[in-house]
Image (cartoon, rainbow, N blue to C red; front, side, top):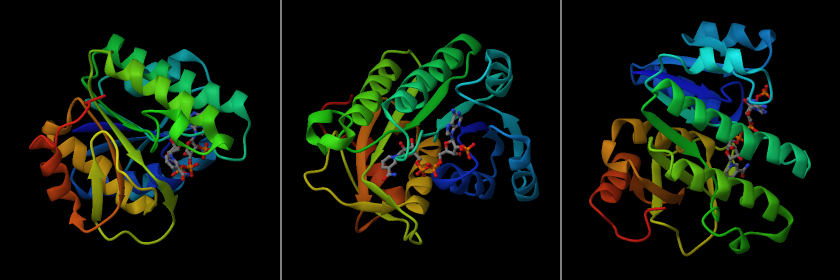
Amino acid sequence: MQVLVIGATRGTGRLLVDRLLADGHQVRAGTRAPGQDQALVAAGADPVSADLEGPDEPLRAALHGAQAVVFCAGSGSGTGPDATLRVDLHGAVRSIDLAVELGVPRYVMLSSMAADDPRRGPTAITHYLAAKHAADRILAVSGLAWTSVRPGGLTHEHGSDHVEVGVPRLERRGTIPREDVAAVLAGCLAQPATIGLAFEVLSGPVPVGAALAGLSAGHGGDRR
Ligand SMILES: NC(=O)c1ccc[n+]([C@@H]2O[C@H](COP(=O)([O-])OP(=O)(O)OC[C@H]3O[C@@H](n4cnc5c(N)ncnc54)[C@H](OP(=O)(O)O)[C@@H]3O)[C@@H](O)[C@H]2O)c1
């Protein structure tokens, strides 16, 4: 499958690029600066310009002909509410709108735990959770085949490929390695039954494949 990863240069998105390549996908790796291309080419990906705050045309070209988009971009915790709105909300909505316009059928959103109800999260990041909440809601009514993956705190530890998932939420907080989130995002592309689901994910005891298959078996709850 031809997959565009938005936010492919660092963090979860970069790990996802490797995961998707290992799974046999053709990967368009969204970057913002030419200097970021070399390592992605060496990995086997096709770097494309995909700046959510940049002009329309490169972003449109990045999406054109793709069969799936995975949104992994984020303004980061060091930026203020303005950047959060520009990237995590407005940037996400731009990519959703373009996916609809260009007929890209599949969209997987890397959202956040508590995005279903921003009041559940720490007060200091309410604006961020509100941006994630709004983007998820817009995605859910886009008509795309969507999935929203909502992890807890991301770590740089090695992944175990074992998680706990909950639809629409887990009744605990916690963390999860970025590597495991990348495995879940890739798993969603391989598991069509995750379409139309928003779910929270933390480190846990269940192999990723089985956890996603369990979701598809209908573990109930609000599918938004
Ligand atoms: N940190 C957490 O605990 C946590 C918890 C739940 C969910 N999340 C979400 O998980 C996602 C990934 O987080 P992460 O910490 O793994 O990633 P990260 O290391 O913060 O990397 C962010 C990526 O987004 C890209 N980016 C930033 N602004 C962009 C823009 N305007 N247009 C396109 N790309 C842009 C960056 O590119 P450059 O290299 O060019 O800057 C980079 O590739 C984010 O959506 C975040 O909100 C994070």
